[in-house]
Image (cartoon, rainbow, N blue to C red; front, side, top):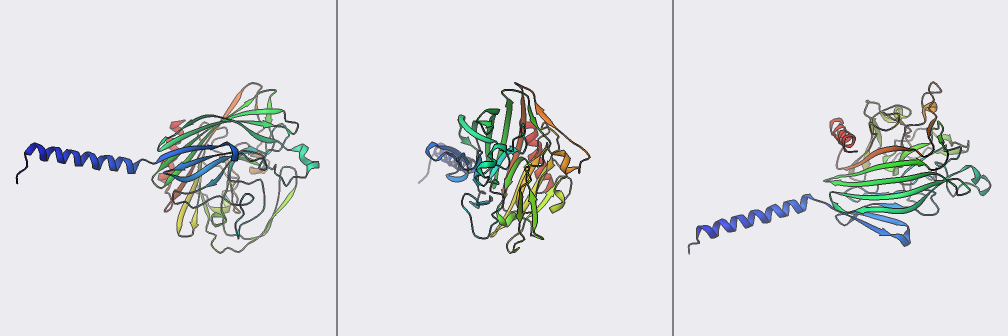
Length: 352
């Protein structure tokens, strides 16, 4: 039986269109933003799987992104104090997921505030309160969550108003969070005095820590000591690498455009990268990145990082704003090369 030529052509065109639609569908990852007001969280789903949640529980003292998972569903954030996991550290209860705050804002410590602070000492600590969701945009490959927060002193008086746009991006095995935060002084001039406790941070899972060497006693902005104990190094695989070629524990107190923390959880090779932005204050930032799992960029704490040689006492004049931009990349399936990270960083610099 012979088919007319035109029928064959139409069949081939239909087949090609079908294949093309299938490829397009597979290459685009749909990102959903699910508000759960009763639970005080917003879930970010990529192709139906949890990527992270924007969460504002009353017992954490600031909004956080927690948990944070790779494209394969592996959690890269420490469970403690929300959902402790066997074998992980239980120091610094204020280190939860991904967060943004600072250790000295008009004399109040926002960084170290937690339920571990005794009630008679709460007078020295500030809290960041979630106020509202401004905007949600879902899409293929990228979604937006825009929020408003209020930085308040112990009496509840607002010091800073915060507006943050979270851009959640999914590309293949990469999950990206672009955080664009505007801090506005709504009253008097706000002082962010030189302090090591800041600013854009993530506390990672035990497997992504650097192997422990010694017990260390750390003090916070109020002088309170915390012991970071030496632990077994079984399964601990983390390694830092900066844009300037500095590695591991030596990255602390150095400046860099980006910092990569890579390691293995189970059979999955993972890279976590924080990129500074060329328009941020003090670019390239100092890094408050520790081997025990605190991974933080701090553009404002010069004195401790330079051993007193330089000081920066940053301020936001009354009624004015400061903008802070950071990109976090979570890559699954191997390490990222310098050129790959530079490409992500350059794209970030041009986008915002």
